[in-house]
Amino acid sequence: QKEVEQDPGPLSVPEGAIVSLNCTYSNSAFQYFMWYRQYSRKGPELLMYTYSSGNKEDGRFTAQVDKSSKYISLFIRDSQPSDSATYLCASRHYSSASKIIFGSGTRLSIRP
Amino acid sequence: KAGVTQTPRYLIKTRGQQVTLSCSPISGHRSVSWYQQTPGQGLQFLFEYFSETQRNKGNFPGRFSGRQFSNSRSEMNVSTLELGDSALYLCASSLRGLPSSTDTQYFGPGTRLTVL
Image 1 (cartoon, one colour):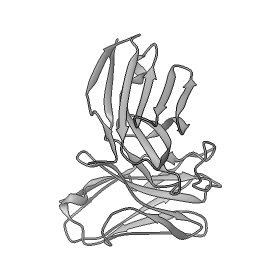
Image 2 (image 1 turned 120 degrees about the vertical axis):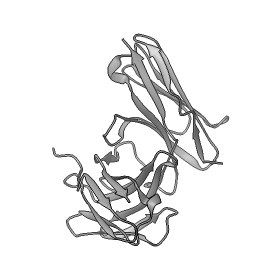
Image 3 (image 1 turned 45 degrees about the vertical axis):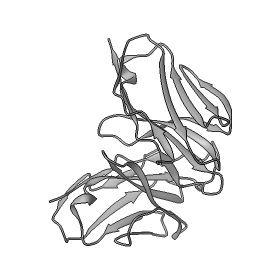
Image 4 (image 1 turned 90 degrees about the vertical axis):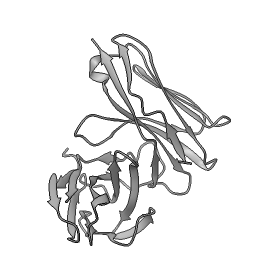
């Protein structure tokens, strides 16, 4: 079993829709949770960074972490065609700052 | 400021050869991490260097090695290449590699390695 599981999709939604992306993780020692966006032929870029449980909002993006159920979510409001990319959830252990464990990524397509 | 740069961007090698990839971090960043990305396994952590010392290591065979120079530039070497080593190799830099929201990892565009 992978430490971070993510539905690979693909996911296709119409422009303006709310997108929900989800991951689960298995390691209780994970304390830091991230969402990355990766466009084709580019490296991942950090979208959201959350420590422990709770919500974090940044513009149209909201990240949620529920440590009791080991569930990570990313919501995108008012989705735009430019949001079309692969989204990767990631976690890292509290003691190993640089070793990030990534989910397999969900390919998202926003239809104009 | 300039982002993370990786050279070369594309590389084709044959089985049994060795390869060296280069990463130049963002100015002032001292932590450099390397990742392998494949369609089957996704993004996997290889190792991290900080102040010229390997600080963390993932679960890859000893054929994968790296080093960091005093200017924080890093190289990754893969010896005795196998077909399964074909992947996108990504480098990421951060200030100190600490678990802080202010110490973000920034990724380079990657080096696409094809092993024939």
